[in-house]
Image (cartoon, rainbow, N blue to C red; front, top):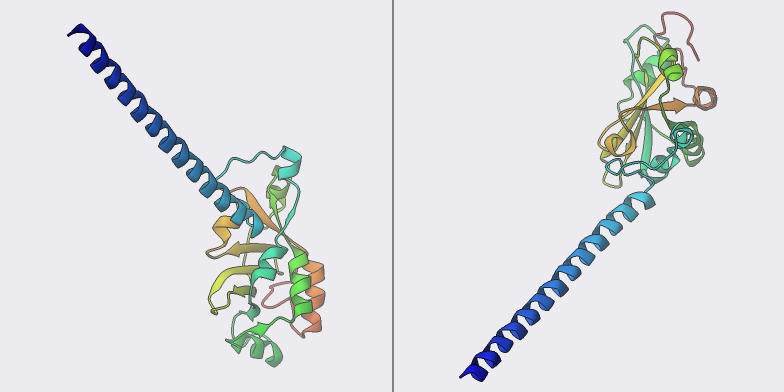
Length: 209
């Protein structure tokens, strides 16, 4: 009778150990799958050129303040179009035609390259914040479209006061709370003038850039 009880107890222990081993195996497999899924997600974000804002940054202060190119956004767009907005009938006829053009101007590959090289994001410093203009009334808008013709981002540029902002669904993935757009006004101005697009539209005085 005593031996039977011992054998029964040993059997119960073996069954418990087997169940524990199976549970640990399944838990480890589940954790490994979750880790692989997260790695794939981060990899996809990195490959698209969009920094993962949800993850803590390991950058040093100098790295964070270093301008980061947003050229990838221009390259990913199926089409980039320039739109001009301004107060009607206060500009020459040629400029008014640009304002009236609701379809915008499709940028060529060369023009897209210039634009891409001119857009950077940067972590704002106290010096940067003190130099930002008090007003922002943009008249030049670069809109980025996907293959289905849906705009996923818009870069608005103010040549009168000097300022550029990135908005749209993609902006939240690209821009952090303390980031701002560093823009090469001179390079893009040269491009715009070659397209017969003025930069001093509706400026009360001469354009800042």
